[in-house]
Image (tube, rainbow, N blue to C red; front, side, top):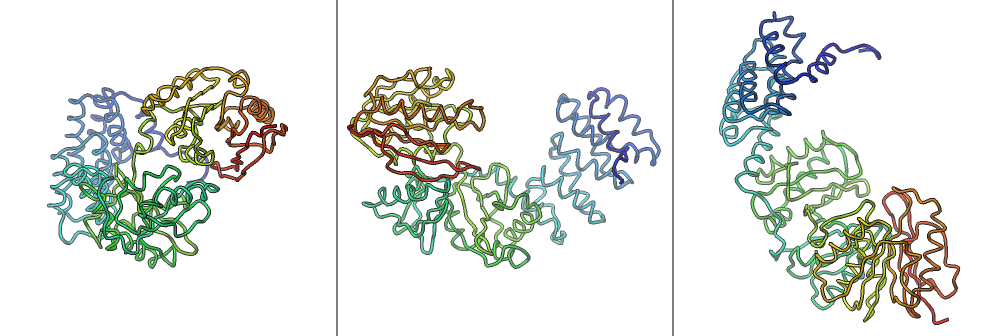
Length: 514
């Protein structure tokens, strides 16, 4: 079709889409039924409109009537009508009668295109009857349908959950990737080494940009891993491939997903059916590759199901040199480390970043901690969880943020620590010499424009110099290249961190006695 040409079928659908259920049912459906075959082909968009409009606004009785009508169209002499009916039925919400009608079509001769539409409909509504009724000699392209239907059944009959407390005892050759923001790797490494120094469960195998690789040296649980607070995501490496595209890559990736190692990890940490969501990281939409890989993995091991709906696991395919790294990641929502986060604010701190800032600040007994831009309170809560805190102060210009920070802090069950959250400008905050730690992630000007960001950071430095006691620390994310002009604040550490599209400097200053 040339640019500028109109598509009559699409235009008709757009018009029909605006009608009510009553108008479609009493006017357009009878008109379609009375039409000659050529007229029906020209108005086949009526079927699509019924599926969409009735799914959004129809009553139970109206939907029942529409389903009966659509079922009758499954046996229409014209293939296009049948295909449109197959697509519309699942939108309204099909049941056993619709499933049986679709299954009856599997026994009839049809071209490959129509069978694919039939398979897509059964993907959405198929259940145990579809698994039992699918012919043994079903075409290869229906493998995806069989897997999706099996996932539908498993989802309803054997709900899945990630087991945090179950120990993996056979961990030979297992490598675990802790991924996070580039620039924070050393903090993540230090946390691993300090946390497991006495227990000896994990050792650090490698540190590279945005990643810390660890290997277990003793049986472990997911609870053990999530005792760490500074990483972003955790992935069990199931294998690597030497190539990233083509049939050879699909075969190698499928072998990794269904390997004995993968099955051990899946079976240990999963309660219920084993289901995962597949994603090619940093490659954009890869629907074709996802379909081929998921189907091949299903052929190798039907017990491991690709399922995009509420799967407890993700299998992420990461670029690795010329090949790929296959990593199994638990999909935990909410993150068990954030049990206290009842609400959030726009542009809130990334939780692992808040934990990393806390570790950078270190633990000092009787710390009096202030966050001038407290947001939802993450930095203050992370510091309190580390222990040794005498008092907490949080300020923010947003009254809503202050209230959210107060609620989150209460939810963290840190009742023994006095905490005060106030709405106001940080320049009018605490009295001189009243804090031992200022820890904050100030506004960056990315979502909410800051008229003078450089001036804001300069004011933060001058305020910190007044409020901090000698020996106190200022730990913050510095979005601009502005240094403290007050000589009493001495730079201790500075590292560049990827803030999701732009670099920011994570800095710590020490207040001298002068």
